[in-house]
Length: 553
Image (cartoon, rainbow, N blue to C red):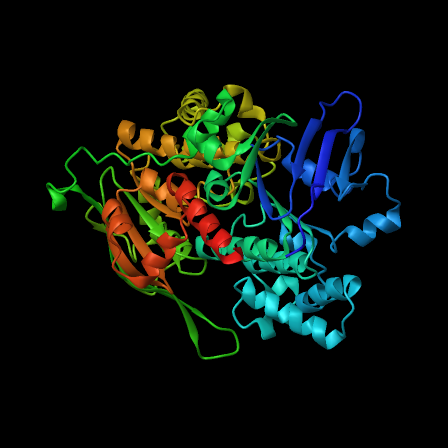
């Protein structure tokens, strides 16, 4: 560890950024210090200025952005006053940025191992062989299986989660003094997220480096950060020690964020889940299987392997597991976007497994799906009004005026203003797109809806609103749901039962509270250990800090 010093590692003083006349300031008088061996969390909703702040610290603002006031000092030296050559030398070597959208950050025509090795050789004296070995080692540390083979892969050959881990490895390979992690674990499985965050914080503690951890997840803040800054409209409105913030935030806005992030117990269905079990059954899935052939071989991927479960009326079943476990494939088989290879799907007493398409089309009004990426699922050429009204045209009894009235009702149901009816998908926020996807799925008054990762990548308050919306719909219209997710905090707030999937199989199945309190399978315990509930964060951070101080004493 480097020798302690009174000079802050990073000092940001009254930093102000704008993108031209007529636009609000992206950053407005932001000031803070980052010490060595410190993890500073920055939290704020979309548009708060978090990502602009991260790029300002490296003087890498997007086109049109400029620093109009303030300074950024690294070990007392102004970064903004350095010439271009000096700034290039510190980027990656002393300050590294981990961004999101990894596929866009990686060079598509160079292997990922070569890209990591190139960063190391640009900043540290080492041979090609040493740099390659360091790259492979880091890929292993960030949780990539068979890192030697993956190092020789190109970005398009990796999943989004793997590509994100490559970007993280690239940022850490030169052992920088400061790591700017801008939603660096967004979209990763909970187990991989914890593994990556543990590695990031551990390496920075060992090197006496500093971390700026930008996130919308207060669970991450509670478990990993020393201090937290709350951003809103380009300003830091609160900067506190994490423990003090979690106990008593000063600002109303901070209290609202904290309350929205907390787990709310799931209400029982009619208060009597255990009674009249057979009469309440809406969906019975029995020994469902779906295989995909591997090109050029006789082998298959067993995406769904002997899966069985039940969903009763007014009930939510959460299907959890890591990426590739088969969760989404199950959902797509239930709505017949994919045809299963064997097994049975009984919906409201009717076997729909191999029902002819024409017959199922009539029943399809009662079974709908909300897709994980609504922007991809929504026709970009259609306004919201047309997107929601399209399913209604299947009902010949409805005329244009009826459809317009139903669109108004649906927008109100998902808490969106009628003024958005003429907007196009690209003009909506991620949360609004999710709500339009839900409104579209609810247009035909379904009894059962598959929600595929409905809370992924959403702001704290929007995620809470989506959860509340699903709960309200169950209370108002008796809707049943399959909730596919890796967000365990949302599961505890929404699901009555949980099915844990791994490698296409359900390895554990039961009531939510029972699964969370007394998991039976090792895999389930591993998933739950990766959960980052706010309520436990302070205790775990204090224990970790005690162990760290004991080790350095």
